[in-house]
Length: 161
Ligand code: CMP
Image 1 (spheres, protein in one colour):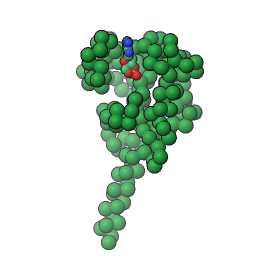
Image 2 (cartoon, protein in one colour):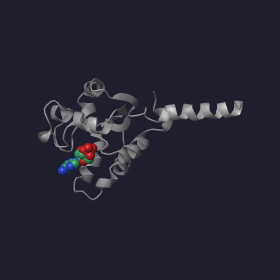
Image 3 (spheres, rainbow, N blue to C red):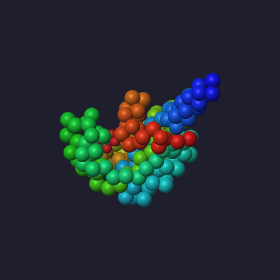
Image 4 (cartoon, rainbow, N blue to C red):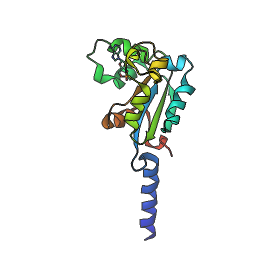
């Protein structure tokens, strides 16, 4: 019996590290090299928090060219791939796991359209992005992508509550 309780406590501890709270979702956000170089980290993070998203994990890092190519491998055949991966490995980035109700959709609304010229006023990209490539932030676009992208940057025990 004691052994069973011990086993459950280990399973529960593991789940409380890794799984989003019931009814919530996790998404990956990157403040790109232009957002970091422009000193916009604090402002961007505060927009996530003010809109009800919780930061469940965070790190500042710098991607190598190879890592940027791996992260954006779905775009490998696009004409902008070379420029994008050179840009993404050009300086430090801030990577976060955001958690909350409908976090993927909510984050994409807060970010605004990929092309800042088309982004709604008051969104991160409308305010801080300078081009479709240098567009300040990245956010996962679907639950499966979020899972893959989160595990690209974080071990399970780095996601906390
Ligand atoms: P992101 O949300 O990180 O997803 C893929 C990235 O590719 C995108 O933001 C832009 O930075 C970049 N991207 C998408 N379309 C173009 C384009 N037409 N020209 C240059 N970069 C692009």
